[in-house]
Length: 140
Image (cartoon, rainbow, N blue to C red; front, top):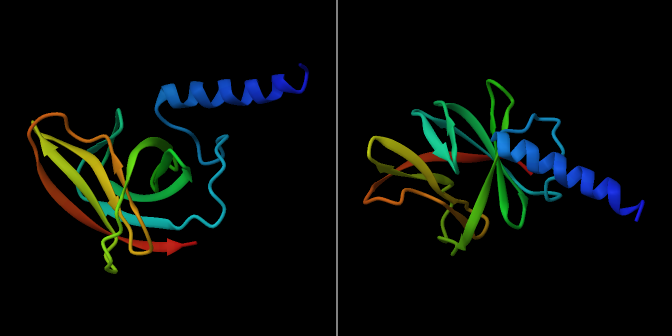
């Protein structure tokens, strides 16, 4: 039972940080070893999951099978975003972020990568249009 308690404490800490919407760069999150890092300059405010993020420079990396982490360069704050499903590889060298635009808001809804399957995220629930932002692979 004593061995179980540290694991539960770490889980409770992560749940609390997730509920606040952000984690610090030194937060309790381990990334998939060797997961590529994407960089993008997003020219508008947007929603990532339930968290409103300002326009700016961001890095995105897969944390685990169900979560992407988005790091704001200016603040170093990290935001976890749940992956809804994987998207089939497009078979090209484009790395893009796709945003749903609805009711005056932008929702990060898809991340497409050049090296494999992309990621579908929770986007707009209402009728929407799309806008893409180019990204690039910056590290592995």
